[in-house]
Length: 163
Image 1: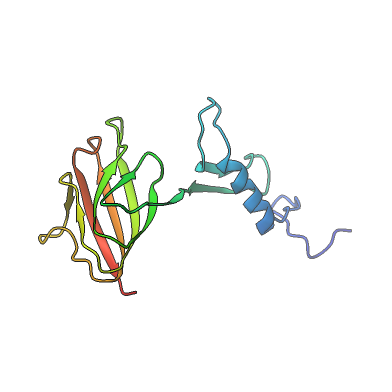
Image 2 (image 1 turned 135 degrees about the horizontal axis):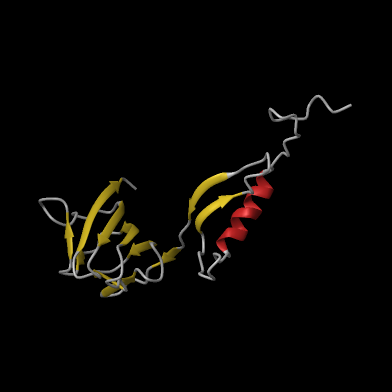
């Protein structure tokens, strides 16, 4: 006789429970996986089990690396290295986005903490606001940028969060 606590599908098959640990292990494996053609998918792809099992998991997963920007008089954020950056500005700086190629669309997000310094942007960066770039004033910002022409033109928008 089966355990009444067991969960069963409509065919009477026992549904195997998945623990958080098992799901995390699958995600970690996906982060280090390659596809059937040998291409590195490094955290971007679809995680699913065999369609013949009763314990199907199917969802999209997109992971990215958080990288810390080194602030200098000119700060270059290389979008080929990471899609998400963290920057604490402790000196005057001009931010430039580099590393995009013409073979696709690039987006990058920058968590920026301003400590009262002058922050400007390279001429290739245009903000959606009629006033242009944000006026930084000792707060935390989320800056988002996109280009479709290899970085010749970056379009940016931002959100400000009181620190």
